Length: 90
Image (cartoon, rainbow, N blue to C red; front, side, top):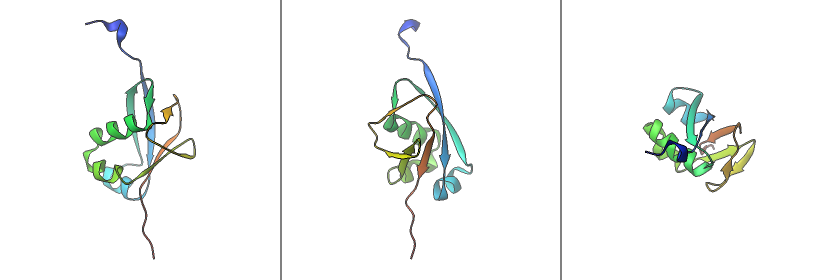
């Protein structure tokens, strides 16, 4: 095993809202990923850490530093991340 080739880890605190918060039972979840990481990497890791969110993650938006982000967007260390599930209303 070559430890010199391992990528360093960074941790993002993901804020959860609405149904995501209800399913997870918490307002935030810390997600650690090797860097560099993308929003898609974070989404997959979050589904693994909290399987109750897996189905909802597919339909939810992710915001990074206040802007909606696509899965291919790189995550800067220290970025503010939020999971925004779809809402219904009438």
